[in-house]
Amino acid sequence: MMARIWHGWTKPQDAKTYEELLRNEIFPDIAQRKIRGYHGAELFIREDEDEVEFITLLRFESMEGVKVFAGENQSKPVIYPKAEALLARMDEHTRHYRVAISP
Image 1 (cartoon, rainbow, N blue to C red):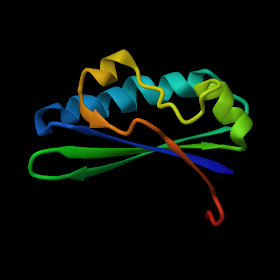
Image 2: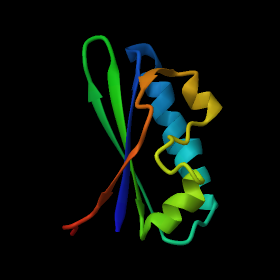
Image 3: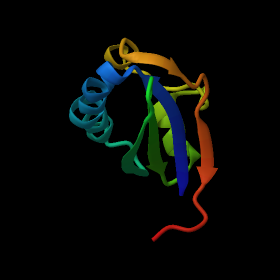
């Protein structure tokens, strides 16, 4: 199992809109693609005084599923245009980890 992890930050006033976009449009859109080996997404949020950090974690059976999702440049983030407009800053690369222990 592979975990694809990426960080993005919004201004506090954009955080709720960004969270709803992920919850109601982006994550469902990814699931509807029916990528073989895709095992869902998780969202982590950390609120700070002047920004809100979002961490997305997508699970794939292997890097082959990641390649179908992200394309040839697997470390390049997949950013939806509506989402990009809400981000104050973001990681330029996504990272992939082998899941060693999982419930």
